[in-house]
Length: 213
Image 1 (tube, rainbow, N blue to C red):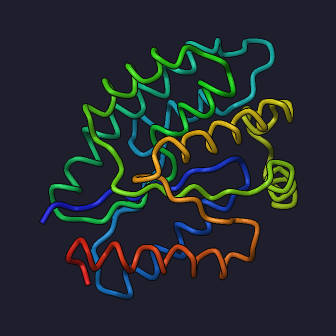
Image 2 (cartoon, rainbow, N blue to C red):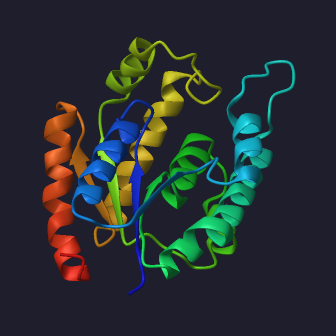
């Protein structure tokens, strides 16, 4: 049996890391073999690209198109080295960000050409789509406030103006409306436990349909 690709998407501070961890623990308790990964940074090459993409360097800013191409390079390596082999091995993959992030951040956020973004995504993924994508929907300002409370130093993307983050949120809303068969909205404004219950309820039905339960 081929594995399944489950992606978690959303604005900064939406709770992806927490929900992936909780989901991972739940799936393992059911005896399901999983892989937890992320973009950028799911491979050795990706870790180097992640540092380039997220470290703040005001003196030498990354051009928008360069940013787009670096994300595409990370994704291409990730698909070939991690995603396809583990799906072929029958694993459930929990992935922190995938193609929708590029559409939302570089398309809606940066205003880059959508046709170019879709073409690069198609090249990088070689047609590999998620089996389900959870959009963790939370107000932009709430999400950014969560990030500040975490105490972590804000990365290059998190330091962008609020208008940039609002455009990203609009992008996710449009994506969810355009691809309802793939993207599921989850209200991420509640406590992590309540959010996880929403996710588990949806995934239980999916796992049964996929033959894992």
